[in-house]
Image (cartoon, rainbow, N blue to C red; front, side):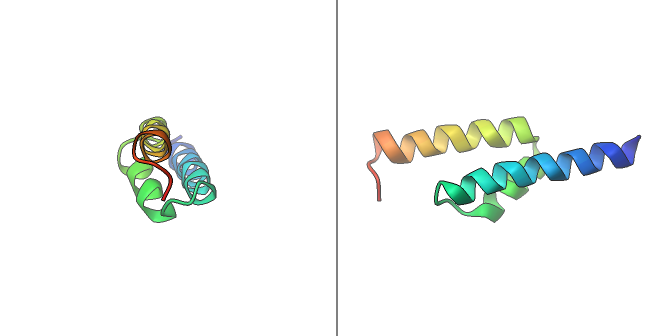
Length: 60
């Protein structure tokens, strides 16, 4: 059962990292953040960070 949880965590963290890469952010930062916290928290952090960079700070 634990092996399925670990595989699921790695796959979902890879998805968060992929979306970060597609948005132009660093893949590894969001992948590791998702592994350490959870993929849901990593995805929320990515959404807030991208919103901040796009609308609040301006596109660089």
